[in-house]
Length: 339
Ligand code: NAD
Ligand code: TDX
Image (cartoon, protein in one colour):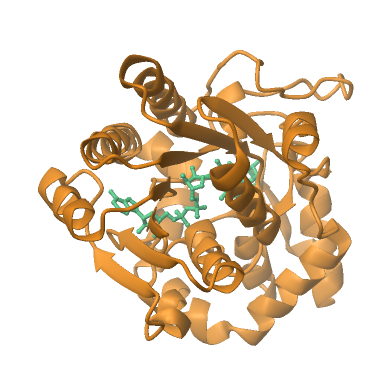
């Protein structure tokens, strides 16, 4: 089985590459990644010499490069993780989100049609459903919750999802879509809440909490997400959407306090800053469908996963130090300077 994994040098994509090489030692995994600021080749170092792995640096929007790779590899399955993924960046500069997340998806699906791919899987997000009120803990996102996006990021992901479903209906492309809640774990880029707070706390720097800090996210350990995608590409029903989440809702401020406690740092580091524009209040996934149809259940409890993650950042400074010491500094100044 040949599988093209796009965005495999990023956070979830790299964890998926590791998972697949381990879970299916007879599969060939081809990673296509543009290596944007979020892609890190050093992450893939441990598998670079694996004969079942190939890395190709290319842009999913580049039709020629994508076509060439599909012609060479004749993939059975394509799993598309490649995306611009950070909400705050989408508020600053939406354009590249539309290009990569929507146009890039169409380029991959055109190649998938041309080369008779047996499964095109789109890695989407729960953010396409918009948000839920804090005072209705009985409400959850199901697969039939209407699309109702808040940010340029989530709109671009929703646009891609609609296009994927249109390719299924119009051309019969064998597609599946997964919509997962917030992931955390190793190799999470330090612009995102959990790694940002861990690394800044380690440096005794202020921890910028947006708004009142009461926004709720539904956290899932990244490996559980990878296992869900593995199941969907093998056993999921073509044309279907699967929500992925583990009923683990946490307010941002509680996550930040937990990280401080684990690291033995003072809560005085917490700084409330101007809220994100259009900030979604609460995400919460109902994973009944993937549980009933495919038997998926998350395996890592948040209490264990967060400790494992903090330990990973403590043990892997060599991975994140070059990131936070370079261009990233300018990014932080620009994004947080006037907050
Ligand atoms: P990430 O930003 O860490 O990684 C994205 C990867 O895509 C990087 O390696 C980058 O180099 C690559 N990439 C970006 N533009 C590209 C292009 N034009 N061509 C080729 N490669 C390109 O993102 P992530 O957090 O790992 O998210 C992966 C996917 O999962 C995204 O589609 C995202 O929308 C989705 N998702 C993420 C989460 C989460 O909590 N992180 C939750 C649900 C869904
Ligand atoms: O400095 C910060 N302070 C803060 O309070 C940052 C970076 C974030 N936050 C808040 C905003 C959110 O309520 O923390 C929460 C999580 O923020 P992010 O880590 O930026 O994630 P989120 O916006 O929830 O989106 C993530 O989950 C869904 C991923 O980045 C998306 O790619 C995925 O689709």
